[in-house]
Image (cartoon, rainbow, N blue to C red; front, side, top):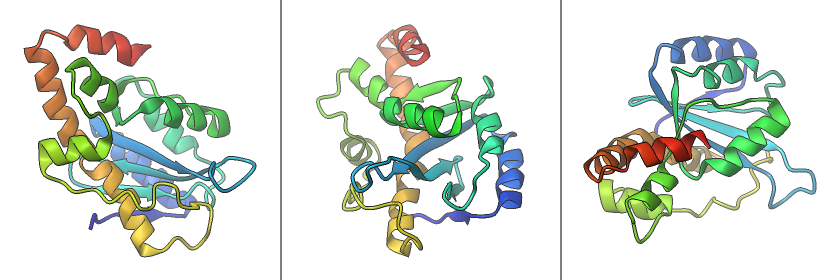
Length: 185
């Protein structure tokens, strides 16, 4: 079970975003309501450093500008698995643009991994078994149960270590430049 800090207050978001600004790398994921609501919305944003995880509740926080400022910093590498959807909904609903992405799904494709899902990669490279039972849950319900929050925290808590492994493999295969081009696109 991943440990985390749930952020539901504006002052806490500002403070954590400022703290995270000193990190060089963070992992990011989102949970949305697209399976359960006609109008899609971002219901949870997960952020992890190498040793801490934060869950930001955008339904409790109308102003995500501190998060947007953090993620738009070109010096901040943001690790995401299958970044396309997360980047689109953060931009569409919160005006957040991430500038420096490392997509673990793209990295896995470039090293010719046969299975590129996050659960498969975490199991193969870190021995982490991921239960995806909440993948299609209704993330708009409040309060979110502890097991759903723990599940969400687990989505980012291992991403940076996975990125390190995949980056090393890309460099060894002389495909790092390819990856950088894909990440920028």
